[in-house]
Image (cartoon, rainbow, N blue to C red; front, side, top):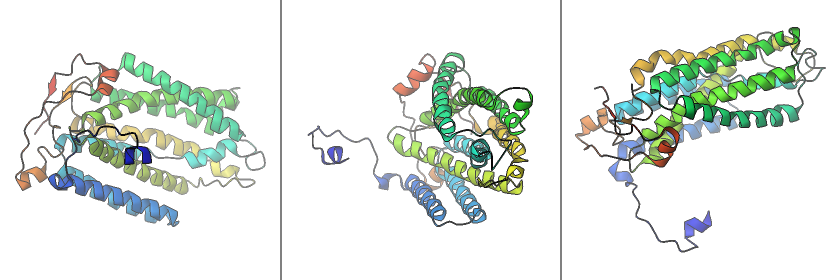
Length: 341
């Protein structure tokens, strides 16, 4: 970091397009609250606070951040952010329990798959990486021209459906059908990863389109931070779900009973991301992924903050970035979408 910081290679200085903090105090406030709030949650985890306390703290922070987004940011940006926040919140994480299910030895879980750490961490990881590229290729060839509402609806419903495959292995049905655990988990992980990429890419794409010129890095970081905050809350909620279902394995001998309700937790976690899809007509713009979204030329354009403070922002025509063009093409970038009042 010292090389660019000290400019040791004597590169010519470029004029910055970033705006001073004093010119956008509202956006700065949102960034500070989100950043310090996330730091506070991390400190709570390091201090070993109990799960209920972390859930209440994360919920309070999420409510504050969403309120600030709704007041300060453009209505189009605030609505899209709210959708992805709720969706990440509904994506409950049960990864801790499933790790023990797959890796417990014969003494801890005699009926289990007994995967080695090498297979679980490395082999499955390599398969997931390879099939993530399959998902990217399938998305660019089949879904890049779809409207956001359609691609998010189809992608998330398909992802929930393939996640139900986990219930089969948790119930040990695959063994009853004569399918080995290794083969079943490899195939199901490959399919789940490919479908996940197809459901995840539209979210990354629209986040890049919601970044106004001059504060791209700040806005993308804010949107990603809100998404990660929702994911943290979803992780806490998943841990609470496992506790309520008495699924709390520790790798100790004779813990087979801890996995009796793991299939139910997996089913609830699979259905969760479909719940926010009911909000698509309200929160997601009815526009193609190749269209330009109106109402996002300034971060606070049309917001309650801009109305209260008396600020108004002219429409700034901006070109789509090369990353957007490489993903969805540029055939329809000039077709505008007019955001509802």
